[in-house]
Length: 310
Figure 1: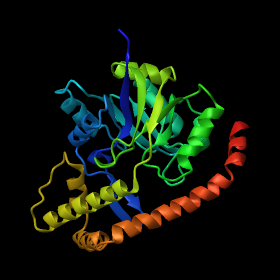
Figure 2: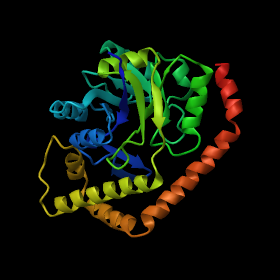
Figure 3: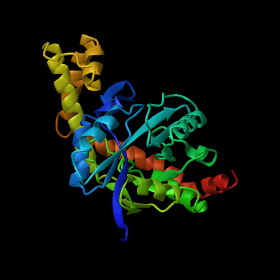
C-alpha cells in the first residue's frame, strides 16, 4: 500500500511553557491547555502534533494522554530547551532536560533518550537561537520556516544556510504556536503513516516545510488573549477566589507575585487592551523587526560567505 502524505507540527506551546519577559514586563508564554492544542491540531488537519513547551514536558504528556482517545491525531513528547547557547528542541523524549546547560550537553542528553534534535528559528535575532553553532552540533533538522517569525530575515537566513549544506539537515516547517489562533500557519509534510515514519523522514532528510508566517491580526489576537487571561487570574487572586493548584503553572505564578505588583499588572493590562493600543503596539513592533531585518538582509551575502568558511 502506498504511503500517504502526512502533516505534522513540530513546535507548539501550551500554558506549561511558563512566563516570558519583555524588558520589565512578564507575561504567560501561552494560556491554552494541552487539550486545546490537540483540538486545534485536529481542526487544522494535522496528523502529528509535537508539544514542545519551554523547559517542560508536562504539557506534552497531558496532550499525549488526551490524544489517545482519537484515531486521527498522535502526539510526540518534546521540549524546547533553553541552553546557554540558544534554544534546542528535543523530540521523542521521556524525561525533562534541565535548562541552561551547554548546547553540546543538551544535545547529548537528548541523544541519551533516543531523541531527535531540531534547531528552532536558528538565525533569529530577537529570541535565543543557535546561530552558526548549528554547524558544530549533531542536529537532525533546522526550522527553515518558523510561523512565529514574521520578520523578513530569520526564515530567509535559515533557508539559505540549509541550501548551502544540502542534505545535512531535514528542513522543518513549524507554527511555533503559543495559542490556538496562531496554530496551523506552518507545518511539515512527509510520506508515511505515523510518528515512526516522521522520525524516519527527519533522519533521512525527506521532510517538506509548508505554510507561511502567522498573519499579524492573529498575533494581535494572541497578545490580547494572553493579557485578558492574565488579568482575569490576577483579579480572582485579589478577590481570594484563585485557589492554589500545583498542576497549573499560571495559577502558581500569579499567586507568587506580590499583591502590589498584581495591582500594577491589572492597570497595565487595562491600558494595553484599550483600543487601538494592541494594534499600535503590533505595528510598532513590526516596524522595529523590519528595520533590523532589512539591515541584516543588506549584509546577508557577506554573512553567508562567512558561514561557508566556518
